[in-house]
Image (spheres, rainbow, N blue to C red):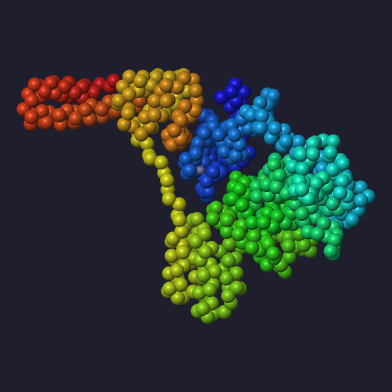
Length: 591
Ligand SMILES: [Zn+2]
């Protein structure tokens, strides 16, 4: 670890850094816990040790320090993680060093692309305010957006020109970078090469798309034309080094705090709906932009909450995407409720027509997913006939199976049986089977530690000089008689810990499973062991070693006697007597 990384590690508070990503609750003198961001769960098994500055999950057994947390959750390498932690902790960065010229070039390009997007955003904003922006302003006013709201979302307008933005940005970056920004398009030439670039967005209302830290990385652009000339209603930035559609949730940057506070996210379909709902004070709202959720987006959301209230219109073109999103969220253990607005209105129109209070009431009254699906099953296959019942059940079975929690499936199945009036024993059995089956996650609990291992781990992890004696006792015993410890599952960890200098205990254990067990032990036991406990642990191991040696001797003795090798018998007898004596002594006084 570099000096800078060391400094950052000493100054950063792991609890504060992790709280940027997930909610933590204080659960002990030194511990905090929350829902693990690395696996799906409903009750918190993710712990952070505030004193020792590490995290550990009792569910999926990941553990590490503040850097490994950030590296994992941000999906970045170690140097980048150090940088992020430094930034979050207000520690000034040294001049940046890169591990390779490619990395340096990439970072330069990213920085430049962000700068281009920032400048473009300001440029679009300016034109929305200018004379050319009149029609766009009218459109936005018609959607109920105030000047304040326009400013909040930095909405802008792109001129009706093929080169206005290009001329504005061309002094800032080379042609290759401009192409990479996605702000421009070009036509393929006869020889297969790309022709000159021109403005991609023309005469459109520009909605910036930000990443989770609020930097603008792309745009969604809505046409103001109608008729043949209009083209697609919305066009979006293409995939670029900054922007990948499947990795962004619209408005998460602004919504994240409110999502955590409310402990649910309100999910709407379109950006305009999202903006409209947000500006009316419901700030925990995000949008998918009409496509189905990806695993990456689910992960993004899972860091902040496990509850989603979905407000999609099930009868629109987006219904398919909505259904897929709901399916994926269900599989990932989200609790989902569904808002149905009267008259099939979208959120934006509903709020404009009936007011925000009515909308909030609808959100509060959102139905559980099972109620909603049962209702849909009934609507799709109406009628009392047995055949219809079978179809209704078949519609529901995949949804039931999809739920990772057995309890939820049970409830769902029995609700369905009751609400659909299923009295056929066979159909009831099918429902029951659907609730039963399904890959209930297998508990991959790591091997439990025995008491001796726990005491030794705690002793060897001592960092307080006041308790040094216990640490030294254990370390010296391992160095002197490694054979007493060899059979322990944690032997490698114990040896590494015994040999550690001033390092952090969590840093010296290389094996991931062993490190996880160490983390669990340290989280469970707040105090270091007393000297007496360490002594008796070592004594127990010594005794086990003696007993095991004694057992071997008896076997050897029996063989020697059978062979009639009395010289050998004499030697072995002598050894046995010594062992017996050692064992007796052991029981009289401790080492
Ligand atoms: Zn976990």
